[in-house]
Length: 360
Image 1 (cartoon, rainbow, N blue to C red):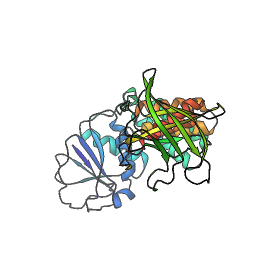
Image 2 (image 1 turned 180 degrees about the horizontal axis):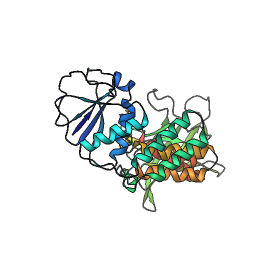
Image 3 (image 1 turned 120 degrees about the vertical axis):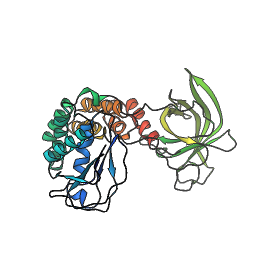
Image 4 (image 1 turned 30 degrees about the vertical axis):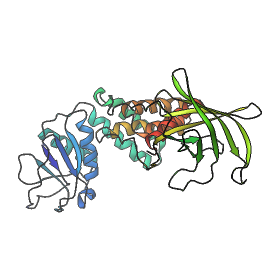
């Protein structure tokens, strides 16, 4: 095992022995002076060069010994050694040496790919979108197949049941956007109110005598709705009609219609928040793993640049590639929602973002 804790440009002072670390991990300190001397760059470089190998690359809390650089310790050493990570090439050399000492060979293509990825971020900071786009494309083109495999398990389905659930609703340009649909305690009616942390106010919409059914194997909900007039006293109904909701196959969203007296159907949708009445914020999603972050980042950042340049189809392809790599990371879904060419696809992607970041 190898322990990386900070860059150092001169012989390391006598330091106390660090705590034991797992034999299959490489640790990089980003605290104190370590971050100033290239600790973050070394962490990113080591994470990229580790690739799909079993070794884990993690951060290390500040050890309290702050030399002028980044410190490295092979598992057999009793004290820290030091490396220079003051530039990209030096950080890559130090990362490759640290991994070699840990028994990990750097796969061909990783060093080149990470170099382009780093250069792309620099170009973005310079506001040179064309150069950044070119560098991200070069990075993705140089990546070996091993790092382009899924890094996270797929999203799990939710129970295909209505009772006890709550849903964050959306109605583009409508009054229902951002409100929460919950089942009343009695179980027959549903109300649409403001979400936490605000205290629920007067119901914006009520579904009376809801009945559950099925459509094509998917649960449905049908009820009479009452939509109070804006600014009117509670209970003053300005409109009533029939509401129908159809749950998605995975149970994480629904699509619905409100059919008023004139027969016109207005669309709305919702993303599942949780079960029960305790509406505490809980993210179901997860950031990409440390070793996959730069790969996922290359696709989502390139996708954003493509979208800004007007190429929504290419941006959508990058979003799908990012989702395949890390389906639990919201950035890919968010990009897909923005790049989707049809409202139905955008709604589905937006629902996944809400589900990942939703209330539970």
